[in-house]
Length: 302
Image (tube, rainbow, N blue to C red; front, top):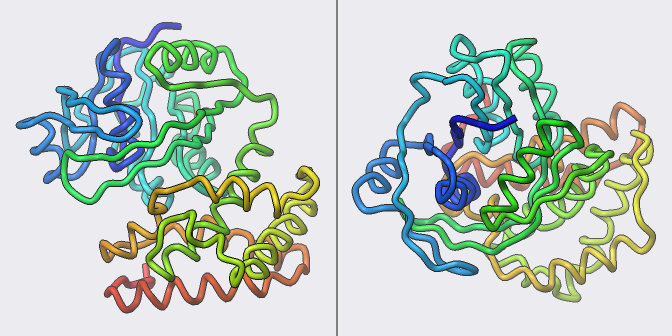
């Protein structure tokens, strides 16, 4: 299956990177907020870091038409998934493929409920990192994309790999999602609380907190029939020590935006209650992040 069109729905930091790299060989349109879209259309998308280049690609504030054989890469915040899909539901076609490329747990169920049988849905994870503090300017750290095994996914992986987006397929995408979730549950809230880069939370003073977060996540994950590697706490510490970016949640708090805490540590707490497993540290972090959101004027009464 070849794709005639690619939309990146939710052109924030990560979405903008995918759109930029894919635009070299494909017809791509970024869908994002007006300020970013106008800046990209007028001056191009400037990417620095692991690549340094200005990309001139199309950007818009909404999807107005979906041609046959379209790939939609969903990179909105997880809590915006339903609204994003509702806005394009009438335009979807049976050969439309929606690739969910977001943080957290629960996104897939939300998208599937919103889409129904109107399009094909695939789940993916990314180890890519990006910072977005100014319209049209993104800093980028490369990382692998993993997509659930599927015939359409094979074509997507081929397209991605040709565009400098290292991609592989997995027969157990749920396990991949959980492995990333555990890392995010450590990195995101701690960096957001202290306004520091990811590698800075590897301080010895935070070791017991980091490891307790992981232990709670693993216990809940095992109750959900997920298997994890041995010595996961130490492996995650080693991984985080090389990450020099600000996490997405830290960026959200810095910019006064709502976070994805409900789809990360909040989901662990929710599933912990389901299985009667204590998740005290994760629950505490959820409370701390929601307090910061309240201080930023974010309402949770929706």
